[in-house]
Length: 107
Image (cartoon, rainbow, N blue to C red):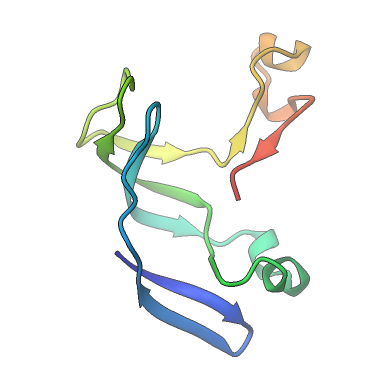
């Protein structure tokens, strides 16, 4: 798959990267649109994680599903959330996952 890979502010390269296979409970998206948010444009954040493919706010199409995945199938159009709630704290149980006590991030 082709991606723009950030190495530093003066070095962003188009690269052919291996297409990952989804593991159990995972799915693979074909990204059709990606946003760049505030954390992507803060140099200290990018440099310490380089090389890095920027853009974690994405929309696309399910391309493949791993073993045990239910409710998704290839061809489904999706928007991916990059924050991962615990689904057990008081906020999550009340349906307010964006204020989860232990919110983790995928990037």
